[in-house]
Length: 394
Image (cartoon, rainbow, N blue to C red; front, side, top):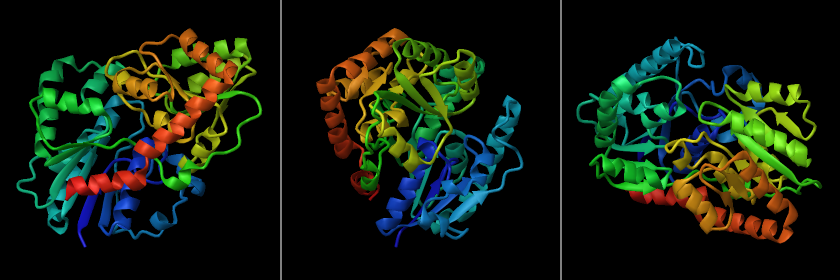
């Protein structure tokens, strides 16, 4: 029985696409006969207090996993602080603890599967470790430092030459690379890194494809984070237009700007727009499927608009046309497969006009919903995709 160490900051029972992806990797690797161990932290995304609610611990297999299987590093620093220096201290501590664990335990494993972001995880696992026994697989779910520049939170221009060298060293330190976005392959190869690469998007399990009965009234949904990469101003403008058009809009949200959006709903006395607390992955998929179309809105930045957000995959997998301002390969995926409306740098009015088209054209809505489910089974099925990863590893 081959042994695999999965190193990740985000893991079950956390919400969000990162933790859900890592949970699926654990469960499916185990089902294929691998002995999987996870190196992670205590659940804290988007905040640690929400995990006092035990409803998030809804996987019996992982609940029963002993401590030596899911190793949660105890951190002295807190990650979710407003202070950038506090967050940096957290990441540095996590990096050093990951480095120490891998250095002393690597001989026990046949595979080391490390996921980025955050970038400190692969730095700790792969840098200055000497000759590691396991085959090293790096999973890239975000481009860094480019994404840090894109969210425009801190100015790192002075450090970019060094950071880009560290980025390249990270790719070079891996034996193989798994990506969740087709465009990442072009980016990595543009840095003269030519490693074996495999594209595996986020996905769902067959049991999660269950579709609930739709709301009687045409309703739009937005799910997930409203953070620095998402355009909260545009979401507000969309909400105002929905209110004018009397279109029902449910936002299942969390993140640093979610409070701002909730306060906006209250201050503007919006009747057709509702903010709903976050929920577990399965609950969110079930709730999403009751709607008619879904939104995904990111800031107007070339790096951010070329990603494949988890909410896009979730919408497709629940049979909802997705309406977005995304560009690049995700834009092509949506438009060529007829699973929604994607326009790079779309305005709030563009988004609302697309929603109205689906509201008023029942045949278009039905066709794109059917196309979404067809695409979901073809590309976003974990039962199929885990076999591709194992073949790639072996």
